Image 1 (tube, rainbow, N blue to C red):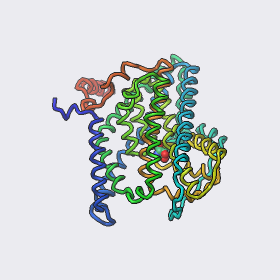
Image 2 (cartoon, rainbow, N blue to C red; image 1 turned 120 degrees about the vertical axis):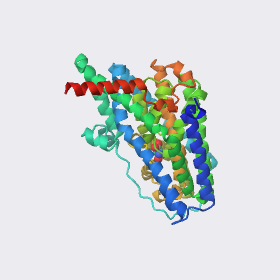
Image 3 (cartoon, rainbow, N blue to C red; image 1 turned 30 degrees about the horizontal axis):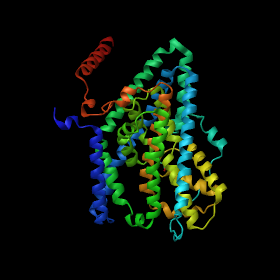
Image 4 (tube, rainbow, N blue to C red; image 1 turned 90 degrees about the vertical axis):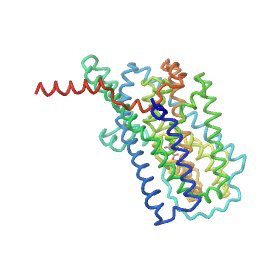
Length: 451
Ligand code: ASP
């Protein structure tokens, strides 16, 4: 077997990432990407844009059917409504707790460093605020009035709610529902195979996504806002490597080192796509196949986390609030900051993990505490890069909580977690086995004969 054949996907994705960043920087620093230039028209906005967009769209294509089939399979796997409630309550509690810790830490560090003081607040970008939805509206919105609509719009909480109900109802029907159980289990297996197929092109797509993103970054803006950018990235890293990993170790007693190594690929996906939602198929695969979390837990905690758990986004909101409050000379005080913490945690429940949504949530928080929403214009220019970093932190939180909850429920396969090779994807995984081809041909023939 050649080495190429056995190179794991993680290695290839890492190479794609490195090359993408290098090419993006080259284009950016040499100013090759000027309007109407060949590089701009055909490479950055042509090839890179197309390949990247096709890939992200393919990932999104997987999300709804995958969550639907895997969550029903998960409910059937748990088979007990009480246990399901426990998984729900534990993950909800941990998601809220980690998000609250994240934003509190962000505010404390940013305020201690006094970031934003003396910053010139003239901003040319206009940012319009969005009203925060009332808690009642968020709750009502969990119920899908029309499931087809919910699926078409990818409304994750509604899809989760419906899938759990379907699972419970199948359990209630019992033996008679066996064909439905089989259909759904096979549906889940087919969708997981489809994830493998889409992931196989990831190295090229990651290259294209990063080359485009880095080529388009306003590097001078990054330098101008260096204080904000550096503090934010530092807090994101502290949260990922210290806070989250301490919570992980204390609650699961599993190795943070193994967790972080196995999460690298998923983090790169999140980093390149800036969307926890689009990353769901990859997170689900990693958490289940590589970290050993039973599908009955991961099928719920992963899509649920992608929607309601956003530690990285909360950190951005904390740092941005302090930065803009200082820039505008507004004194928020303890009550103001507590409101910010509460609002950010609440806002994260109703908003999906898609690119740039953090800024919209920030505008909700600002309206609530009376900070100037136009201040968001100050940080808009650098948000593209920061969105990438915080999305990687967001998905890491989803996965860490999944492992913790699984461990506490006796649903973690520790031998999979500790096996460095478990679930790694190689080219061989994409082969269609000869006996499968033969069986399939026979089955088709049989159906023909019957007709
Ligand atoms: N892009 C982030 C995510 O999908 C959300 C945000 O912070 O804008 O998790």
